Amino acid sequence: MKNMKVYCVALVLVLAFGMSSAARVPRVRKHYLKFINNLNNKVLNVNCKNLNPYIDLNLHILLPSETYEFNYDITRSMQFSCDLRHGFTSKVFTVSDKATKRACGGNHCIWTAKDDGVYLLNRKTNQNKFMYGWGK
Image (cartoon, rainbow, N blue to C red; front, side, top):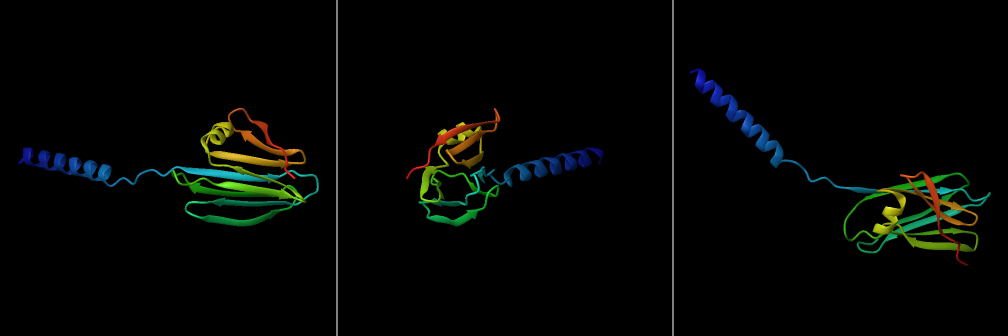
């Protein structure tokens, strides 16, 4: 009888651990983006899009010192690009490529718009790196 209880407890434990590992949901990685308007008393327009599948995050108008953030699940098809504009100047660039993720030090990228261009914060070194000048 005692052996039967031990076998029953062992069976329940094996089934419980086996079921929990089989029922695990695959971990989805996310990419986080933040845009900061550090322009000198100017409005910054931010519009980010993904082409396949088509996703338009619409225009976000940032007053000085305001921020805009979004995130998405990392998949092979997600290739977001963002259009940053102020006045008659703009810059369109990819924000989801591997080189950009390396430059920002991971999956949390912080972009800052300044009067001379667009900067990316490397979270590991805590240094802003000049990435793009403003186009005409």
